[in-house]
Length: 201
Image (cartoon, rainbow, N blue to C red; front, side, top):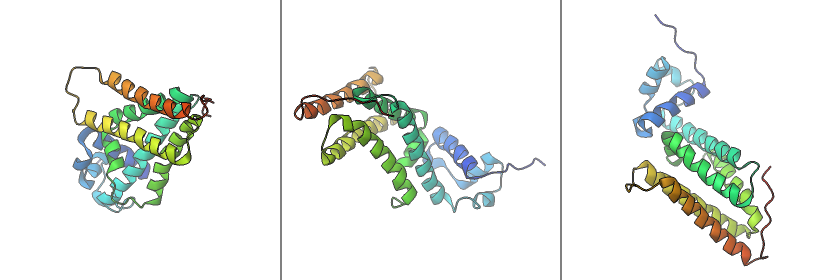
């Protein structure tokens, strides 16, 4: 009889991510995950209290991983380059982890403190990048929402196979992000007339 794998929460999330990236979030079950980990289903309940809690933890895990990807892309960049880096990292994350990204938008408890903190980290990163455009606080929030809407909308349509025409989707993404950047510049130019771009540390 083969020895059963010793598992912890990190192992569970890693395998669950693999499963949902390959098969979709809605196909995930405790039984499927236990089989892949070569453990009995009750063993998983030592770490997660059922499928809903597992999906909640995947939402947090996915949001944290998205933040890490965006932060890594933005470090050392500033201004327009940092905006482009954030956008490209976001879309690449969704392409690499479609199921995990889906999990970040489908969570049982939106009031979860850990999830809110992970989400806020992404918002604060975007606000930090936007600081060089010298926007007012409320204006910056509007622009972050707009940028997220562009990226989430593009990613979601691409995931559904909605871009059917034989035209380069990467070029479409570049045009979208550049158009967003032009909008930022139009706001900035109406202020001090010039934007200063310090690199993100």
